Image (cartoon, rainbow, N blue to C red; front, side, top):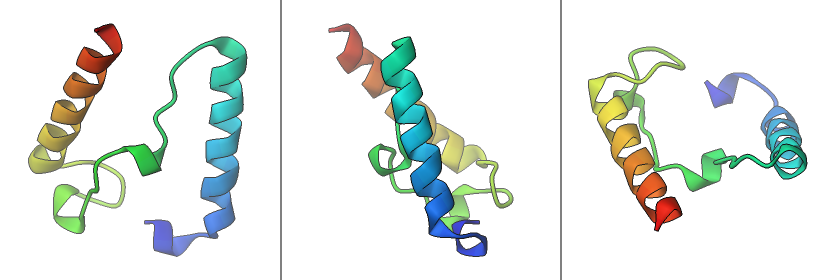
Length: 69
């Protein structure tokens, strides 16, 4: 999907959410902090398939575990 639009959109998106997270006090996990997802992790351009969901769920579980401890 990212090949279909200007990379500046991702830069602006990340900057906006990092600023909002700082102002409002929530955690923002940027794309660079996520595990690497490949084409075969998706059912379409934006939705994870079972394999991708499992990868994401394991990542979130570990992230939360580290945040709580």
